Structure formats: structure tokens, C-alpha cells
Length: 507
Image (cartoon, rainbow, N blue to C red; front, side, top):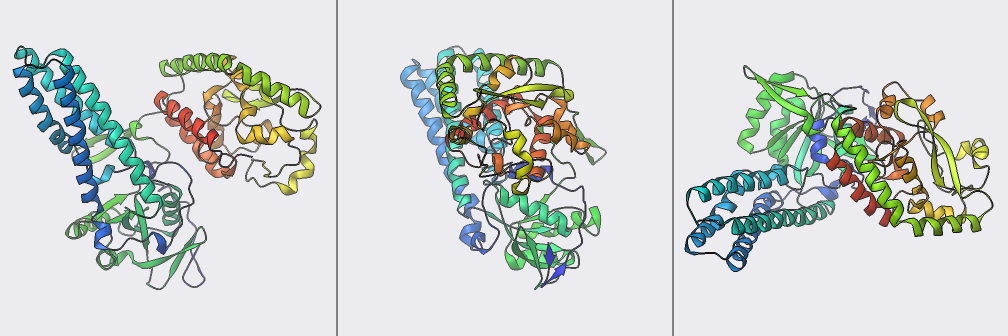
């Protein structure tokens, strides 16, 4: 990375890699470019949050009204019930606004928008349930259940649809918050790289602010040149000139906490939000809890758990899903076995030693997709290796058979791994199962991937597959190891199906 015409910028290994920011940006990979094509500078572009919030307000009211009408038509409502339903029609959309479900900070990112919709709805209907107990025939149970159920589902579906539309607009460079990124060059590069790698990232980076930076310089990030707008002493003036709506602090800056505090005060007059990249990396939101002590906002991070009831439930889900998959896919498995047998000489199944939980070796099963003796040819392909770190990959691998190429494209060669899941050697979702030679090259922290069972699929599978570089694959696996949840596993399984249907990065 460089600043100015050809000025080199010092490289720092800063711990400031923002978990709060990463939770906003999400995990993924897209081809979004840094550059002027994403800059949205007009007043109309900056006014989009108000227009979008208005659309959400209209959609919320329409969904609530539809749920109320359903209660009238199918719930057998009486005179008192009509009054209750009228109250719901008015109060429910208001409650959604009071709970901040239409705040710009939750538009299109994370699960907070859905949580606020659910919280507002549940607490409103809890109050209505108490009122129904006190006033007879005011809100019969059948009407209550019908309106609440249809309304909540409708609201969540409407928000999901709105989010898909918004993210599609953002991928086109619209509905983005103009932002400047402040910090040391290496921290800025990391944050900008994460923003541009996320398809749903809400920020459009207008430029960067560096300690000692001067206008006319530039910062090169992933081959793109971002303008240096000013030094850290002149951020407020830069915000005013560029009409930025957000200032992202990417890491430690000269002046420390006092500088950040005073910057926040100065930004109030411009209504620009201040976003801080936390020192916490790869920590999911549910593990972070605020513990204020005498005005000091302390954050407590729950330790990850590698055993217990949650893991028992995960094992139960693995067994049920694996049995169902093997039964339903048995005709497909038989057909694939026949194709492999007829395509090239050799066994149908390929058994390869992989390293599982706690470093235990096991024999992973796959449909054979390479010629017999492929592993012996590995040395001759070393010069064609496109992987980094311990990862070996070749896009046009000559060892792959004809049927193996399309089986790999749609991950059909991995279906026998459901047997590994039944045996307890693997899980449905988990880190990528490494080879023994890869483990031998692991750095100390990389071995944390083996704290839980490897998976048939995982974050690596839905985030680029073979297109991922080594560092990103490790980062995703370590994030999963420490932050996995049953709901997250279900979401990964769903996204895996989508990734198989539209295979990007598979070879």
C-alpha cells in the first residue's frame, strides 16, 4: 500500500480490527470496487434514509391493517373486539417506530432490525393479553392468535423483502452512506477492504484521513487509489466539505480517547454519525455484553463453549439430517456411483485421511473425482499451485476426471460425507477438514480450527469456496469455531443449498 505519488506507508500490526464494524458489514465476498462509481454526493442521495423509513412505515401499516382485517373476517369479532382491533391497527405501527425498527442504523444489516420488530410486537401483545384477561370478550384468544401470528409473519416477510431490494440497490452503488475512514494506513486498509468485500455494506468511502496526511496524496487499497482528504487534525472541515454522513475510526489515532470524544461533539452540528472499529475481532454480537461501571462503558465477552447442551443438540441435528439426507438421496448416490465407475477405472469412493476434532485423524469419504494415483502427482503440480499458506488448489487440475469436474462444481462428490457425520467424525456445519500436511504448517492460533468437528459445509463454503485465499479461509473458520449457533447452522445450510444451485468459486 502506498501514499502519494509513490510514498510508502509503514506497515503496522494493529489489533484494531473492528468487530462492531464487521457485524455491520457482514461476511461475504463481492466484486464491489472502490472508486468514484460508488460516490453518492447529492442531497437527494443523502436523504434516502428518510424516504426508505417512510416506505417501511407504509408497509408496516399495510401489513398490520391486513392482519386486523383477517381478524375481523375470520376471528368472529364482536363490538368490543372491533374496538381492540382498531387500537391494534393504530398502536402496532407506532410501537414499531418507538422500538427503532425503522432507524437508519439497522437498514439492511445484521439481525437487529428483525429483533426490534419482534420485540415491539411481543411486548405490545403482552400488554393486550393482560387487558384481555381484565376485560371479558375484549380480545378472544382466536382473534388474538390470528392477528398476532399473521401480523408478525407478514411484518418479517415485508422487512426481508425490503432488505433484499435495498441490498440490490447498494450493490449498484445506490442508497449508501457517504463516509470517510480515519486511522493509521494499515487499519484504514483493513476497514476499507471489508467494506468493499461485503455486498450489503452501507458505506460509500469518499476518501481517507491519515495522521499527517495531506490533500493530493492517495492510499492504494487492493489496487485502487483512494484520495487522502486531510490529516486527523482537520476531520470536521473535511466532513463539511465532502458532505460526509459518517466518520469511521478504523483504529488508534493520535490524541486517543479525548480526540474521539471531541470529534463526536464536533460532528453533532453536521449530523454525521461516528462509527468506532472495536479492538475485538471475530466476536459475534450475542457474546458481547455491556457492563457499565461508574460511567465507564466496559464490554464483557463471553468465553466460547466447546461442550455442553448446545453441542448435544448440534449432534442430534447432525444425526437426524444425515439419516434423512441419505434416505432421500439414495437414488442420487446410486446413480453417481454408477457414473464414477463407468467414467474412469478405479474405486467409486475416495478415502483420504483428514484431521478432525482435537487433532484426531479419520478417513473422509468422497466420490472419486480424480484419476487413480492423483496424490502421487501432487509434487509435479507444485508450480501450478494457486493457493496460499498451507492450501493447495489448481483451477484447471489435470488430475480431475470428466465426471469429477461437474461433481465438484455442484459439490456432489461430498455427499458420502453424510456417513462420516453419522459416525461422529464430522458435523453438517463446521470448519473445513484439513489434511495432515496442512496441519503441520499451521501457526499456533490456526490450530483452534480443530476445537470442534469439521463440517461438510461452513462459512468457507458459502463465501467463495475455492476462490477464498488462505487468510480469509482461516478467519472464517476461527470465527465459526468461537461463535457458532444452531440458528446460524441452519442459515449456513440454507445458504449452502443456494451456493450449490449457483456455484461460484467451485473447482
